[in-house]
Amino acid sequence: MKARAPSRFSVEGLRRPLPAVACLLVMAAVTGCAPDATGASSTAQDFHEAVRSSDWSTACGLLQPDTRQQVAEPNGGTCESGLESLQLPTAGTLLKTEAYGREALVEFDGDVVFMASSGSAWRVTAAGCSPRGDSPYLCEVGGK
Amino acid sequence: MKNGLKNNGLSLFFGAIFLLAVVGQAITGQAVFNDEQLAAGLDEISFAQYLTSSSFAVDVSENWQSEYLQFLLYIVATIWLVQKGSPESKELGKEGVESDEEQLVGEHANAKSPAWARVRGWRLTVFSNSLAATMGLIFVMSWLVQSLTGHAAYNEEQLRNFQDPIPWLEYVASPDFWNRTLQNWQSEFLAVGSMVVLSIYLRQRGSPESKPVGSAHDDTGTTG
View 1 (cartoon, rainbow over the protein chains, first blue to last red):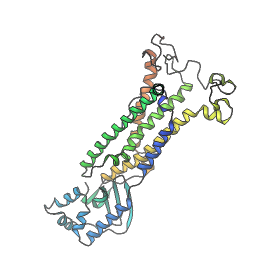
View 2 (cartoon, each protein chain N blue to C red):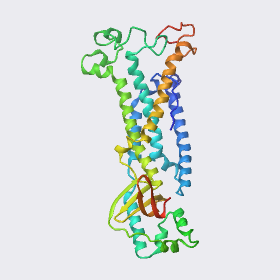
View 3 (cartoon, rainbow over the protein chains, first blue to last red):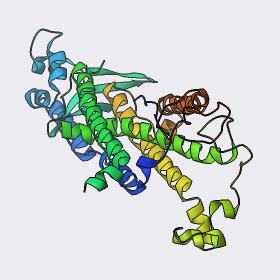
View 4 (tube, rainbow over the protein chains, first blue to last red):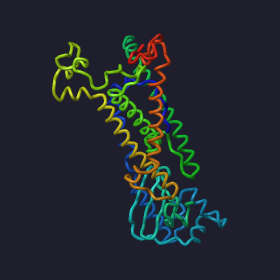
């Protein structure tokens, strides 16, 4: 992050600007590409569908491992029993999905779900989330 | 071959250490990124994934833009500003863009002058400002890339912390963007200023960035 001080002011090493411009374009193209937001919203919808149909095993399988453990720990039981005991809101229409790098937010009518990329799939890191201004969302599942 | 290496030693040396440094930055950057992923209970990423991440891109581009800005300012400021005694300055009294005769353009061009230095009109204007224009273009593009990749990296961090992402326009007015920018600018400006002043009184034998060792402290614009 921090720049070092230059040792020389001549432009000897910078006489060929085209490689630098090409590097910038490649950098912007490669890192500027939006990650697969559709995959995130699809997984979030699958999660809510599993919760709606009380398919706790499938719902737990869509949680990030760390989140799955958080759900199981409070009652000393399994993730499935933990999810069943929570009052997760019902998700309505998909309103928007925003994905940056390896993270995504999926907003439904009635719920906000946070996702993280795990291997080649998306997994839920938090669900049942309500906004609290600039503070982190308050979530029923996962979150802070 | 041997002559080619010798005649381009400076470019090759800096090209080589640039590559080594950027590889080192990538390796250590991946380690830092993965530490943060593990702390948040998330998966580690591969080296290839880190190389194409906004996190790596913003760390690279924020340094690039400040370096090119430094050279741009130095190229342009030294047209009109001088520093008595500094080999980095031109001679006192030569402030400005100088005469055509001094610049060897138009009818004052010699047989080895580049073609666009020998003609009048837009080609001479473009060629006369091509160095600053190119450095300026790379600076602007690097800064733009910093803003785009910094925006993505910032929002990724926001989401990792279960907070709302922000729009790009809000990001370019944010403390994160300006802190990344200004912390690089201040170091570049300090380094250039130090070199201008220290080279008045100090010498490095054999370096064209220094005056000859025996030059007087008030000799301006001489290089050794």
